[in-house]
Amino acid sequence: MEKTLDLRIKLFGAFRKYHTGSLSLSVADGASITQVKDQIGQTLRELVPGFRDDELIEKSALATNRRVLTNSDCVNESMDLAILPPVCGG
Amino acid sequence: MEGLNHLGVSMAPLSTEAAIEFIADPEHGAADLFIGTVRNHNLGKSVKGVSYDVYEELTLQTFRELCDEARANWGKELNIFIEHFQGRLDIGGISILIAVSSPHRDESFKACRFIIEEIKHRAPIWKQEHYTDGDSEWVQGHALCSHGPVTYEGCTKDHAGH
Image (tube, rainbow over all chains, first blue to last red; front, side, top):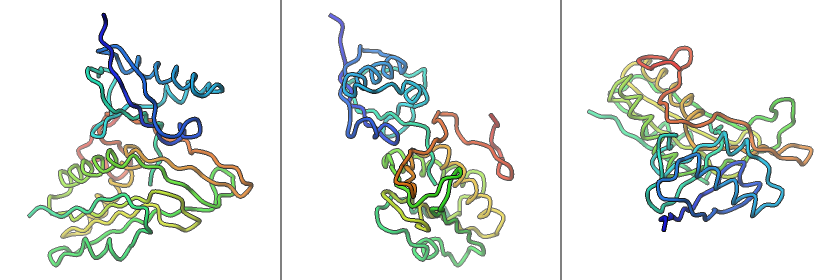
């Protein structure tokens, strides 16, 4: 049986207008960043019936507390991640 | 000797006096202070306030990396103070303070400019504008990626362009 990983996804910025707090989801061991983002979109559509903002997910990055992940990264353990929309601090 | 860092995310009002005091050094003859404030308009809309959302852990990590990069370019003795506000501010409220001191002025000018430009592109911070008509909107920003420093006129020393 394929091993699955549990992820907790923290939401920031524009995602807060759709859902406050974090998302819990499961992905296959070794899932790519694209696959995780697809799963985030699916989870948001389930939780927020009107959610259609695929562009926001596409433009967003995934990160740990320490670094922004790249498209060559993959997920090999259950962990906390954050999905980060385009930034505008300062 | 390596300079000092003060790096923070604060829900309390930011203090210019604290920034200036922190970077003061008898061996430094120059200090720069950047103060970011909330303005009353953006893209033709009248703004009455801004809420700042911050991913604190990664923001502080980004600040640490920027300090390392600034010292690699403009000298290890730089003293650096960076604080960003988290929460809601009215017009004129201070959203960010960056202060840098160095033995001579060129380094502190360039390092201060470098740090604010990089923060705008790399720190996980977002702002939601509140308009006088009662509406509010999350501001469009720069997509994050792990590509290292951005480049801009006047502060491209030793940085690869992209």
